[in-house]
Length: 404
Image (cartoon, rainbow, N blue to C red):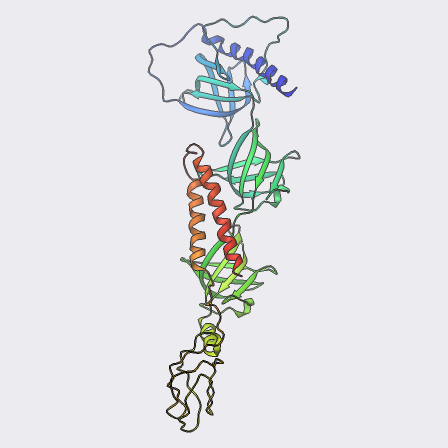
């Protein structure tokens, strides 16, 4: 039924096209130098059969109104109208076209920008269109995208628009800035109407630098890369120091820090905060939490010649719990010259904040931006590379999470 209506609509428009092209039958310019033509693509927003003009509403930018002149050529879909033929005579089954016969058809016009007279006009039945980008802003009725070429793109949402985030049905307002999105839409005379919106949650940003200090209302500041940002934390924010659970109050000024966050350019919500405290690492080693090099100083109050076997039996204290014999002997008051090593338990060196993984994550995110900015699709290879890059980003994020 819908296809039939489309065909009838295009058929009526074809009659109207011949009517518009009637002026082109008698005179064709020959041997003239071609003008520096421009192109306008979009949907027919208005048609004036008397003035012989078409108003084109493009997907991006302002409307363009072109005039039909004696030399204007028309085509319908893949077929071209021959302006040398006289207009087709109306039959009883056909009706004269109206301006509404053109409105809503997709159109592409090649025209002279100095006169706005069209040299060629292509007309086609409406078909679904597709675009991809990043969410700039969103609501239940409107969606603004940042396209890979840097331009903005505006779409309208209505009650029939299907919107999904990570595969789940949502409203448009559930989308946040930075979410990658693919949109199927139709060009309308006054708007771009989205019919299907498929989005996924954007991967968190990664910020590395030094902790500056606490702010108000569960916020803190960090500096790095020539900028200082303020982050907000909530009850889901994970904070770890040397890979151990901590609180916001445990962070210290100038402490190395890595923050995974999601933001909209003004508010940055910290998802995970990882910090290092070198003093705690050293303290852990001195208390038997790491390698003991046998250089520990005792508090023995008098001389002794008892050999030290890792378990110090002088009046001084040896903080290493190991029992491995040490070939050294305690030859002086309170000083242990043994070179033995402590075989007591040791902990893994802290990997926070995973500098190599974080560097890889940043590089992959930058590569993704370059792929989106590519001028064309290169036979589908650009899109395939972007998909694989997304998978690599996800794997790196999973690797970071697995070490928590």
